[in-house]
Length: 636
Image (cartoon, rainbow, N blue to C red):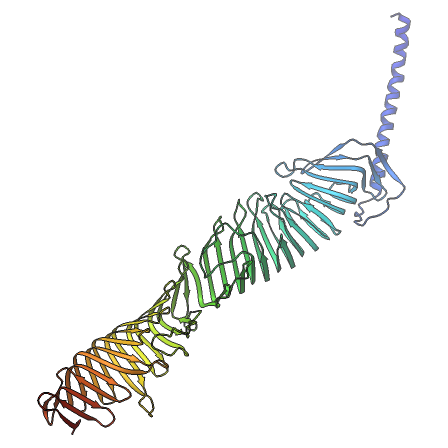
């Protein structure tokens, strides 16, 4: 380079330096002016109502790809077609707006989408004008108007919003959602849809007025009144609380509070308990539950109800497609099913009453203070208290006792602690309740009782009393067959029967023995073991007594005593081998080498002794050498 050129450059350096100083000062003044303009709007609050933006735009930028803002809680990434500061002092984003809050809470980002989003200078308050959307984890919220408060992590809208999550979707008119606690409040005409994991299962729909839902815990409550439906099933309550399995899997439970009413319709299970049983069948054609509170719990990872609990004024009805039904009323009820749909547990208390109708059979009714299933689901235990004694009624019997057990696989019964039974006249007209009348009920009390359904046989034990009108039977064991009418008694038998003399009122005759048997086909009662009969002032004793009954009312017709027969009348005693009483003749004939022992006349023998009951006459007949007849009056 020539010396002349170097000289010219040296002369220009001061001029270049001066121009640099001037440009620097100009830039500094521009920055101050921009800062002054940006602050001139003040800290006016954001107006949350939708509005038309003014024509004046400040610092407008177009076709923005993205820019970032650093905040105390993380970075904010913004995309939009236009970005400007409005005369309202707020920043405006328009056209395919996307705002992302990065690295928030455990690395979970928050996404805001919309056509127009306005935010304040601090980047803490975002307003969606027009259709907007929020995305956080699996939650999506859409509305035509929304607000997001970044510092508090709260989302809000007072216009209709739609939201979806992995198991829940719905809509309402007002919403508040906290991203920190993951709590959502949705109000006014709330509609929910709970989606199951299985694609084949129908969703659960709920309608109410206010939803409080914790997305983190997978729990929520819908306040109402609430209406719900699940396929063909329907329900209602004042509020419904629901809970998902951990990880928001299947819907785990529903809790209906306040006038709960739920009708379930579901396909029949492969199995149900009791199978092939005529009692306590929980039909699954249609199941209805009404109570102050109803709690339904599903299995964790498989479809199907695991438990149903109800409290307060409970009414449950189970119907079959053929018209059979079972009804339960109580204050508290609990059912437990296994995964195969078999009933494994049942408990109820508080004036429990169970009714069952099967086909054209008579209703079966059971009542007690508490009823529950025991014995691995094979026994229905019915218990009472001081004010309510449990009872069961079916067909032609009614049993009341302190404790009743029904064996569901056989329909057998066991009753203890003071049994009271009523046997109604049999449906079969030719079968009577033992030797009692066919037209009237028979009453029985005892300490214990067993009933065998297949043979229709009763066994009563201890302190037994059986009666119908004037007829009474006392014993320690009483066996009765409803099929045949046969009766067997043992241990301390006492029978108080009646007979009617010609043209006179009925009279009472008493029998005692160790054992008694009644054969209805023969209309015959047998007393054995120290058997005895007492009629007015006559007592007849023998090893065995046979009593023939008449056909209509079962009154005594004839009485026969055999072996070691003795007759006592007033102060006389007679002995023989056989005695026969004919009711119509009102006489007892003693045969078999009879002997009369009278305290006044001594010992008198004969071939036959006849005791006439009405006038106390005794006729002694002797046929050995010369027939003779002697008539004496007993006691004279």
